[in-house]
Amino acid sequence: MIDKVLSKKLKSLITIRVIFVTLLLGSFFILQVGYRDFPHPRSTLNLIIALYTLTIVYAILLKRVKMYALFAYVQLFIDASAVNMLIYLTGGIESWFSFIMPLTVMSAGTVLNKRAGYIIATFNSILYGIIIDLQYYRVLPLEYDTTLTEKAFLYNIFAHISAFYLVAFLSGYLSSRLEKTSQALEQTDSDLRDLELFNEEIIENIPSGIFTTDIKGRILIFNRAAEDITGIGRKIALRQKIDGIFPFINPPIPPLPKGGERELETMEGVISHRKEGDRIIHLTVSELRDITEKSRGFVGIFQDITQLKKMEAEIKHKEKWAAIGELSANIAHEIRNPIASLKGSVEMLRENIVTEEHKKRLTEIALKEMDRLNNIISDFLTYSSPRPAEFHTFDLNLMLDDTLELLAHTASVRENLTITKNFNGPLFVSADQQKLRQVFWNLGMNAIEAMPSGGELSVNSRESDDFAEIIFRDTGAGIPRENLGKIFYPFFTTKDEGTGLGLAIAYRIIEEHNGKINITSNNNGTTFKVIIPNVNGKA
Image (cartoon, rainbow, N blue to C red; front, side, top):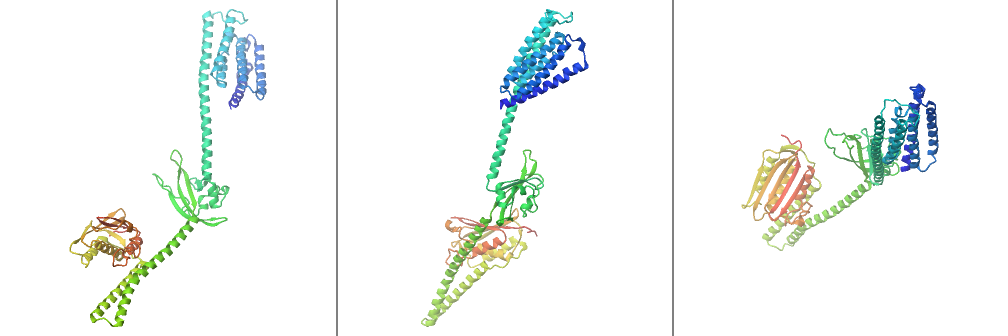
């Protein structure tokens, strides 16, 4: 890796050398600016030719050498020597080209490192100092201005040497920083590639189908599971919009909200698999944003729930038959008791072996059991075949007040039992008034029967958001914990009398109104909370 980087730097050095020699020195001779003032113009031209020749040799050797660092040092030393030779040929202390020497130092620090910069700076300092000293003492055949004193020569050498080492320091520092930055960028790039590969592997191996789209709904990512679930290849999918694969998305992409956080859009629909027929898909779509929170499109996750739906249908079918079996057993049990009483009474009346008073008593028992049978059948028909709800807007509190008034005058209410109510003004709802009256009557009777020794029944109503809440609270003994989950089952009852359908009917009626019944119970009493929507329930 290091040799590869150094090879690139050497190529750049060779290229820059050719450009520099061509533009600077070549143009110098073409324009012949001060050409005739040079002591050795022909030798200077030969030096330039030699530099071109060396550049060609460098380019040829670059593809063959293996020790790039040594090859770089050779070039740098030759460059430094050539620059000092150029300074000698063009006037020494009066040469126009002394500014090139710092460039060789900069090249060393950039191509190799800070150490190489100091080495070339030292080499330049020695050569330049020798040339200038020999010129001052007229050892070299170089003329100079006689007004230049010894101090001027010394200061010139000092200034150049200082520049060499300063350039070596700066170029080495910048080169090392650049190298560290490059290494950090390479490591970051490698980490990003690894992370991208890791993310792709995760996306490809997730069993759920995943896709992403742009703002217009064009598919950008379509993983392997998405191909398997839809039966559509990735290449085909990437040429489509998402509603072409999931036609049940309507609109093709849910509209973006204006500001704020986007909620997940969950939907189910059917797609046609090319080989396996229709498939039921559960799809969740959400907005896709970048790190600046700017919307880039959408991301969707989906599963094939065809088998799950089939299993749910089978379970419901089995539960239905189980419920029918249990219901049939309960009906048979409830009907068998009054029939047994009827049979016994009729047999005794047929034998005519009882007194007139006893006959009258048996006849009353038979009539009572017939009424009980009729109530069982009526309640069962109400539960199993309810009439459709008829929704009208009315004041729920007014209807509750009438129902509680009737409850207060039933034979079941004792002197030591009180009924209190807390209504906050009118509470209008859109519902079936008669059915809700039946619900509240059943809840009220259930509470009264739970307090045989007396107590208090309190009824509260209030409006909460878009719902109406009605709370029945008694002070009876409460319902055993093991029975709390069964009280809404048909024919479940702990009373000696009753069909066990009252609460089941109430539960079904509240379900028809898209509401719910919550129950809490302890040793201090039981609370029923009825919650129904009061949408459009305005007077």
